[in-house]
Length: 257
Image 1 (cartoon, rainbow, N blue to C red):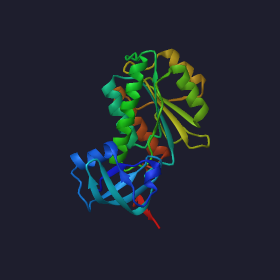
Image 2: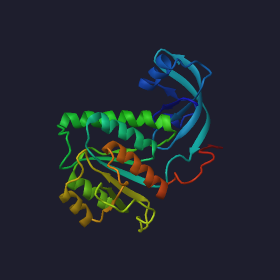
Image 3: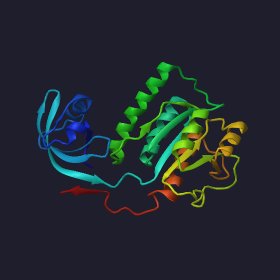
Image 4: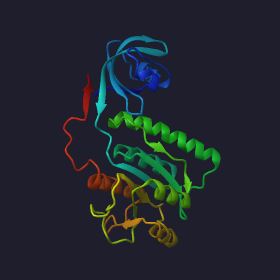
């Protein structure tokens, strides 16, 4: 598989861009790239290309773009993943996997039973960590658009944001008996919020508030899943029922003349 690297939007549109910074350091000193190697470049905003390395300098690579690409790996379904804060390592692992599943928005929030209580500095560090994970994951899973990362919100603001921006809203709850199905999203529109609770689950008041605000509760089966398992399973089901995981994609990249 061709190695992929990020280039800023103003560079990727050039025929002979120069790669610098952390991406160049990784290519030169970690991956040991050489002149003549073919690589992929993307800007995280949908632009993608194939390129060849012409010259390697101590801290940069001079490239020539050989083909512009149009990718079909982005889902037509805009999935907003609202996840109650979990312990740091769990949140990082979940985020990485929901990017692979095509999530467009990552919306962490604080619920009644969330264990982490983050200060301002911790919130900044956590978001920076997620931005780094997003870039790494995008290169691995062949997507070309970075997900939007929302700073952790209070529960009420999460509800409000989902209500204002999403056509459909589903919350997975361990006490619900009705399974997730293709019949759940009845309104038109392609933006769907999927909401997941913390390790201890949602409080009864939180569920009541979401139901009063148009959230549909759904089950993930008779077994109690760990919070990190529930999020991945729920997102996969949503992508299968309403997105592109139920379709067979033959060729996910085409060259642009």
